Length: 120
Image (cartoon, rainbow, N blue to C red):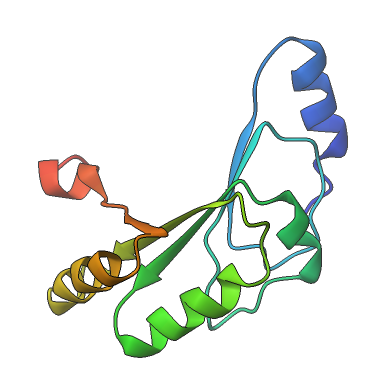
């Protein structure tokens, strides 16, 4: 939503690393050391995000989310880490993700550890 170029430029000049997690719904701006792209089906990604992605993380609730994840994976560089994260409110999604990753080793499982630990 905002042009992050000046901010990330100053952070880099100060010797700091920057990491962005984004749905990619707005034009990409800024210079980052790592970009986690977590696209949402209800708010399609802006095409400018794909070239900057370091990691693709897709939240999975049902089978249509798995198809969405595969579609998004075709748009990012082949070197990108691909993660599937079970939707916390959908208990059955965990088994879907585990089964999918076992059959598709190019994907890994991502868990919201803070929720398992009860950290708010």
